[in-house]
Image 1 (cartoon, one colour):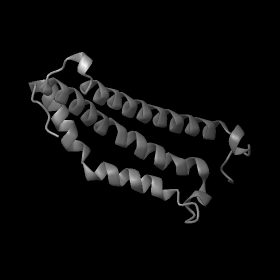
Image 2: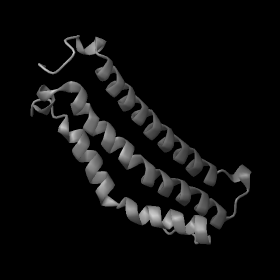
Image 3: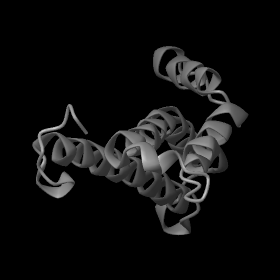
Image 4: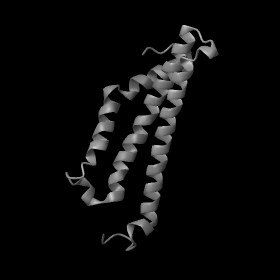
Length: 131
């Protein structure tokens, strides 16, 4: 690029920073999903002795919180992918846009605003979230 540093992409500090942000977003999203999965497993663990309502709350709250936090991380990562790869990344042969489109579709399917309201209502008022 005529506005670039002239360094190879792998040596360019700005590209390294973008890749670092991308990797951190992916790590955070994966960590959130793994934590929610552990909570789902725990909700069904007979050894914990949870009653049906406690198990439901543990699982539902974990899933809803993950649903609130994860879409932005994934959408940011899939958008920033294009900042790192340049103009050739929009080539239809690469189909990289499908990652952003899939993330956007999932995030839109269950709007985050409703899950965030439900989580907030629980933490403020103790209202049990509905699935």
